[in-house]
Image (cartoon, rainbow, N blue to C red; front, side, top):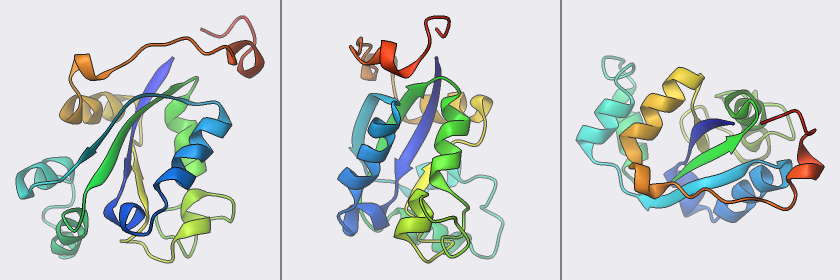
Amino acid sequence: MERTLVILKPSTVQRGLMGEVISRFEKKGLKIIAMKMYRFTKEKCAEHYAHLVDKPFYPFVEGSMMAAPVVLMCIEGVEAVEVVRLMTGSTNGRKAAPGTVRGDFCMSGQENIIHASDSPENAEIELKRFFAEEDYFEYDSPLRPFLYSPDWK
């Protein structure tokens, strides 16, 4: 099974959309194996968004991510990174397809509801940034036979 990081951004928390967004992943058949609320610091924001720190819009990213707590989740499933990215939609909410999280809940490229790892390699790095091994909870789901064929692990 593959793991990916999902961050419900401050705009999601402030707008009361956490439950609705989380339920979409659960209804899809993905499994949340770690979850916690977290408040970004300037240092952690610069680390997580290191690829954007030198961009002129970075102060807006930092301000947005520090405006309120976020919800951090580790989501697990077959091809979880790709599935979550498809469910998340385009970065700019105005251009995101209806039915995606961003397409249904935002109008902005900045206040775009959610962060999702963009590759399995980055998911591993990002998950280590926010979660320790003891944060993960392995559990069996009685729905597994109805989600995957027997040959998927």
